[in-house]
Amino acid sequence: MGGCVQQRLQNDLVNVPPDQIKEATLKAETSAGISTAEFKELGDTKRAAVVQRLIQRTWGEACKDGRIVAAGYSPSGSSNWRVGCGKGSQLPYDYLVSLPERSSGDARVLQCYRANPRQVTCSVIGKPES
Image (cartoon, rainbow, N blue to C red; front, side, top):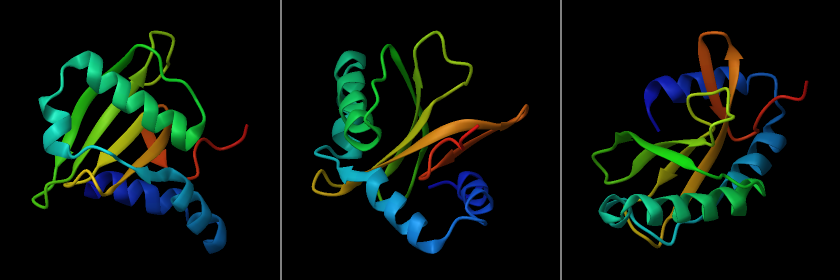
């Protein structure tokens, strides 16, 4: 995960009990079933299907008309992808999906929200309750 996103994630979790963070982290991870290299080779329609499956599995939500943009690649072969869900979203992206180097690894799906007018934060605990 990129340093900037990681720092925001750490700041977001300061007041969350460790047990809740551990539980949320486990919930946000799921078997990827696809590697970064395989995902990069897919067309837009198949990429959207993969991302929709991962979001549904981790958050129980649908992500229609997903816009998928690469957010970064690590030297280890893993990758981060920003996913926007539909035209009605008020965010540049709604989820940050991290894919592993190997298809046997776990994907992590973070839910994003607007922390303030200039910052989107992605977290394993999801959007704060209003």
